[in-house]
Structures are given as C-alpha cells and as structure tokens.
Image (cartoon, rainbow, N blue to C red; front, side, top):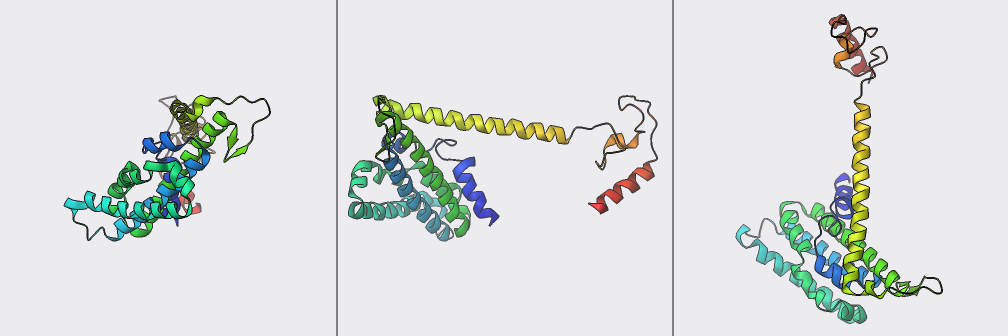
Length: 258
C-alpha cells in the first residue's frame, strides 16, 4: 500500500510531469485554452499512460532489449487509436478541440519516458499506479493552466461565467503567449512552496540536533558532552570527565526504555 501512495504522490507532487519535469510541453501550451480542453487532454493521456505502462510491464521479459523502443511505440499507438475512436464516437466536440494532439500522444515524452524508465523494469501493479500518478499529475496541471487561462481570457471556467459585471477579459491569455505566462506563474509558485518546505525541514533538523549543553536532562545516547560534568561549560577543554562506565550503563538503560 505504501508503494501505491508513493507512486501517486510522486506523479502528482514530487515529479509532476508539467511543473517539475517540464515534459509534454507541446500539448500543455497548445490545448489549454480552456479547463475542459485541459482536463480532456489530461485524462486521455492518463488512460493511454496507465494501459501502456501495464502492458509493457507484463511483457517486459518478452520484449527484446534491442527493439524495446519500437515495441513501446506500437503498444502506445494501439491504445491511442482506441482512445481516439472512442472520442470520435462519444465526445466528438472534445475530439475536434484536441485535434492533432491526440495522435501525437504516441510520441509524448511522458509516456515513452515512463515506459523506458519505470514500466520496463518494474512489476505490473507498481507500473499501473506509476502511470496513474503521472497521468493524474499531468491532468491536474493541464486543468489548472486551462482554468486560469479561461478565467483571465473569457471570465468563465468550464463554460460557467464566474467573474463580476464589468470584468474585462484579457484576450492574450487565450492566445499562445498566455500559456507561457500562466505556466511560468504556476511553476514559480510551486518552486517557492517547495523551497520553503526544504528550509523548514532543514531548520527542524538543525534544532533537533542542537545540544542544550545540559547533560542532566539530555537523552541523546552517544553525545560527546555526556562524558563531561554537566556543571562545567561545554566550551571548557579542561572540564572533568565523568565515569564512562556509568555513562554507558545509563545509555543502555535509555535504549531499553525506548
């Protein structure tokens, strides 16, 4: 179960294909003129990614190493064709909106990258959830970018108007440059949050390792200050040593109590 959550967290946050790895930029910038288009492209890619990861993992011992890339492309192309036919039959408007970017999923670097780096070397269940995590991360990223562009460019999201009266749409956000602006803005926010998280972890680790120089209340087994008299300054090189045998006996008792 931990492995499952790890793969999902990895795709959504830690190695988000759009905001962290900067993969699949072509559909990210091209189709995210609205939240619906972003969500549709993301879920379409997720379906292909999950199924291709699963099949490649199941066949990893059968596919010869020398022809693995052509084999990956054939498997991915098969699923892309199936998904495209389903979209044409049941969601023709979305199929028309995504256009040529659906067939281009075949060469999407996210799908081929996960097939090469993970699915070909891991078991089916882990590969399935790796594809699901990366696909959901891609879907969330595209939906966020599409929603922001749609709100700023048209004053609506998913077709529903949410802006107050008098709002003037900023048309550039539904054009190509708007995609770069929104992508850069969201990526900068994610990087800032990650940087603050790293600083906080570093500070907490430093505080945890700080010696209070009061050995009478200290429970850090093996701390060098424990071998000196707590009444003396820890900066005094001539402070008298305690009985090492007594210290070791105390440390042993602390370990047993823990």
